[in-house]
Picture 1 (cartoon, rainbow, N blue to C red):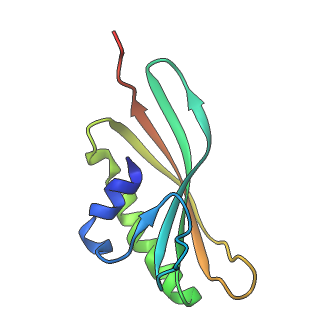
Picture 2: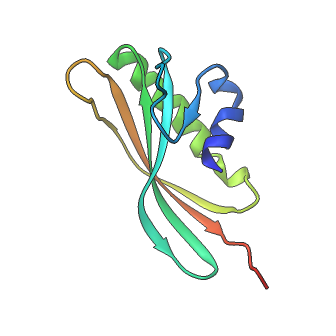
Amino acid sequence: MLVVFLNRWPELDGIPASTDVPAARPERFVTVERVGGAETPFLDKPLMAVQCWAATRMQASNLAQTVKHALERAWLLPQVAAVRIESTVNHPLGESTPRYQITVELTVHKQSDL
């Protein structure tokens, strides 16, 4: 749901979001991964790591700010009741792969099967 939302966000046009690092890495891209969170029969509170990858640390930082702006509006999705940005940090993978990580918690209404 969050990947689809980010891929449709106008300011991120041409910057793909996915759950995995693309085999052929574009210059800038975003990955989304659930890293924790509580779940009840009616609510899900996923803790998500949203990573913003780019060619330079400055580009990764700028991309993170754009992505954070989009994430703050994820409440526009019908099933999302609340969004809480936990942190935005520089999270490089080695010295040659700039990326920033946004940790965000969503409150999601679960669909009832009844």
